[in-house]
Length: 381
Image 1 (cartoon, one colour):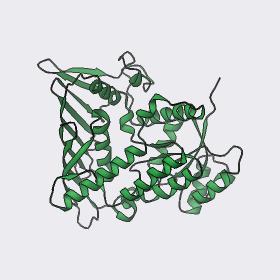
Image 2: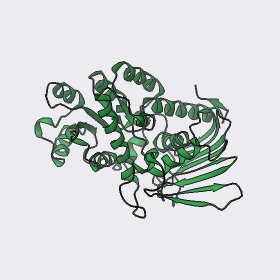
Image 3: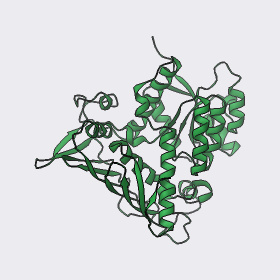
Image 4: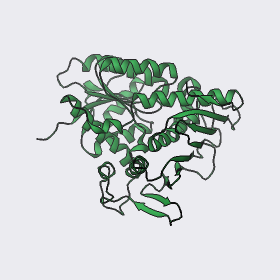
């Protein structure tokens, strides 16, 4: 029997936005979701025009998320989930309203603007009984999931060293007022106190946590705003201590000329090491002690169910950023269908959730505090 598409609405993501289109493409790729409504912009005219662009019916093109939730709740074919792709400061109020209305939430990262909001949202999620997913898309790449399995299987031995970096160049110079993506990301009122740290540093942190499954215990950090007048950080250096005994380093930067989207991670144990880079995501390097490095490629006979389920084309046909997002949407759809049937799906342990979001905000707070105190070692409270 064919499973009906999940009816969803989007908040944010209208004309001039970037990440909203990525989410819509990802949601469509496996044909598990249907976009039926939206409050796509805080500007009423832009909200209506954006909805028309996406063939959303005029009576379901809303000018506020409050109106959308109120009306959709009365419809027999009302929305089942909401995708939040707004600037950070709107994540909490929109998610709170959706959850209290009994609607599942798919939210872009970071989960909220502050740790206090994240902790409150965590309680709302638990009380609501709804599902909450956080779209850390890089953890859904097939070879990233395979890397986690190698760690879980003990192929690396005891984890000792974790090196993760995420450099970009796009904020090397001060951005003009017409740069919508830069304007809110460098405005602490909308992004939160963390700039580069919240935007991409959290991706690097989550990737390290996802693969190693070791919790971070403390950080020693140095944040910098290199561009004159910038009110948030644009470069992050952090030393990491994990509760399993591993030590690490994290560098994220948006002022690194020549770097487009250079997320890369290396993990070393006492038996072997692995290396993966987002800009070449279809290969994973695995090196056992005193043996030649092995190049593992993304292919269906990799011997991993969790990795293979995220592959849509044969080996040698590259997949990447959009497919990583789509893997999350496919997983979320499976989880929501299972929940509707009163069952727990094994993928719940693989999809970032509210706990991931809270931990990310604890990481941000610890890094900010450490840097403000000249790099003093700071525990994740």
